[in-house]
Length: 255
Image 1 (cartoon, rainbow, N blue to C red):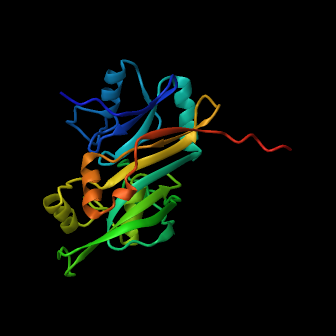
Image 2: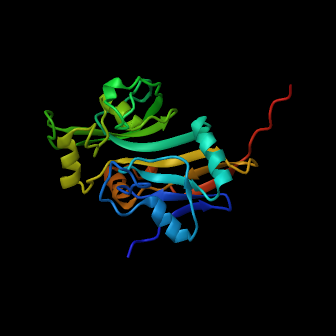
Image 3: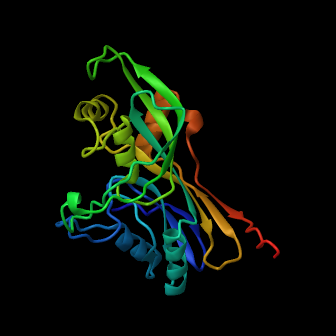
């Protein structure tokens, strides 16, 4: 029997859940043969219709919100479209990442509608910050030891695979990224460290509530796989916890 989804927050307008890694949000023509989706599971669990207002890649885990009525869906959709949302991710990457940096490589869409080379480059901006690191006494690549970093990642735009592409372009691919990463490091984590998945998790989301009375800040704990890895690497102090916090909205400035 499938375990119930973890509900991080719920009221009459929206619900926030922890999306498991490997689970598609909804049906896609790019994933034929898949029979289980987050949208379906959540609808069945709540016994009511739910409306997705943003997306997470299939291999990414973490916090995701759904509206519970069409009006809230429209308001939340506008909030995401206008980038009035603060997103926070944790990523495990190869190498010793920079202490703090802004990545602004323009990205072409990867929606499969036409060749990527024909798509116009679009603005993309990601803030990254190194939180911790580890050096392992194993030769995975050409060096006798291997270094990895824990990165705090905050995308300001929402291009497809933005975080994965930006970090790879900068030279710090996310572990477990089959498309933009390094196969030998991915295999090492899968075979030696029990992590056969993309090590990217959406751990924070802050936005204006669709009712318009306050904001909401959500935090999402890591799944068992990433939690065990953080503990193994001595990164337990960076583990997020499940929480929901109401935020006051500043009144408009007087004119």
